[in-house]
Image (cartoon, rainbow, N blue to C red; front, side):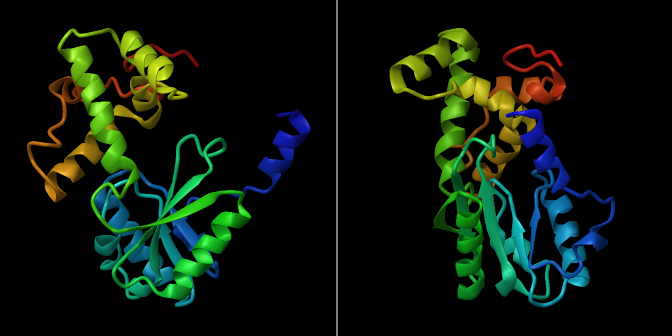
Length: 226
């Protein structure tokens, strides 16, 4: 990206430290950390701040849209817009329809996603939806491979990149997502689906406890520099 293109993008972004800035918007997308209590508080506030016509979307990667919708006075306006990471490169947006999501909200969210150059795929509300119900157990098994001494992190990622044509190995991807986020998603899958099948690898829990969260902390399965 050229410096001019970068600046044009930045000029389109404004920031605020208050949710009051969401007043009068057609669409608000929440992208807070993967913590139900934090998201629930935000949606209660958005329900108070935003007009009845505002679409309230969550970028949650695993938390129930139905539970988020219950925090508002307009559950029919609540929907999931799960953007894939890294967002500038990945075309998929997982559109999560809750039990009470109105059809016009679904249709408009799909339309907006396409206008952003994304490919929306509609899924129903279920723990982890499709993306993380499939992805996170793979990442978890990759962590078990390192924990059990089967291969190094570099070796596991090389197998998946060279043998399965993944553009990024599962452990490098986990570092990008954040190991704390991966752990949170695994626990959502455990609570909503199966305690044993989705049990987080002990190494994952150990690394999160030690503050080794991946790129954002500078250390995960790989070391990172600013």
